[in-house]
Length: 126
Image (cartoon, rainbow, N blue to C red; front, side, top):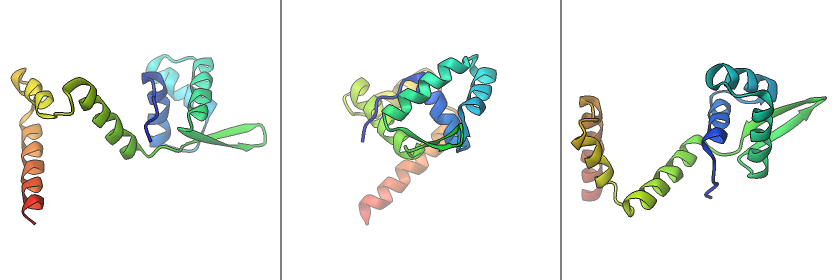
C-alpha cells in the first residue's frame, strides 16, 4: 500500500512511531519545540493523516489519542523504493555512486554496504 505522505505529515508520523499513543497537544508541544510547528498546523496534519488511513485515534472523553497505522519499516521501504524508481529508473547503483563520487560515504557506510553485498552473494548461492 502506497500512501502519499508530505514532509510535514512525516514529522508527525515520526513522533508517533517514537511514542504512541499521543494527544494532539503532546504532539504539538514536541513539534513546536523541534520544528516551530503551530498547534493548529499539527491538528490539520493529524486530520489529513487520519483521512489517508496512516494513523488512527481513540476518543477517551474529550481527548483523542493518536497512533500510527503504518509500520515505520514498511513505509520507509516503500518510500525508498518509490524514490529510487522515480529518480534512478529503479537502479540503486547510480544513487550510491553519486554519494561515493562526492565523498559523502563514510568508512562505516562502506563497511555496511559491503556486508549487505556479501550477505546478498551468500543468499544467491544458497
